[in-house]
Length: 108
Image 1 (tube, rainbow, N blue to C red):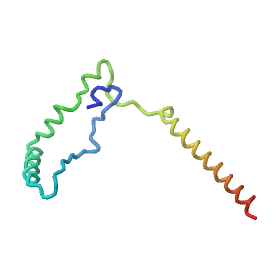
Image 2 (spheres, rainbow, N blue to C red; image 1 turned 180 degrees about the vertical axis):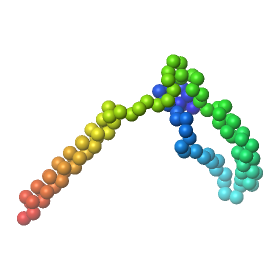
Image 3 (cartoon, one colour; image 1 turned 180 degrees about the horizontal axis):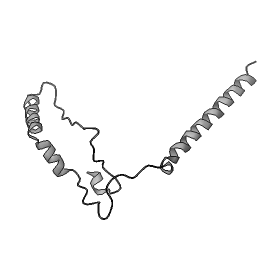
Image 4 (cartoon, helix red, strand yellow; image 1 turned 90 degrees about the vertical axis):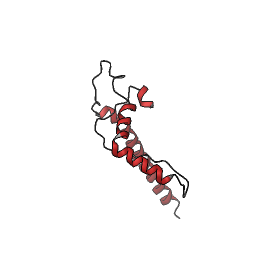
């Protein structure tokens, strides 16, 4: 629902992870079996997919003059990850060097 108002997000056309939903009932609830039966019927009849297409975001609201689809990720988009990697490696080398120096100097 939040993504419907945020046009900066892009949805992929392919479904690569099918989300399953669950509703919890107390242990030994008398409603569990009847609820499960109704949910299976809704799934088999295709009503869940129909409701999903009807209720989930359509791309019409955000597509005013924009080209649909995701943009290509470049090196500029990943530079912060490289900065963090270099910072971590540098911090690790400094820590190991200080530890070796400390151990060598005060080992007596």
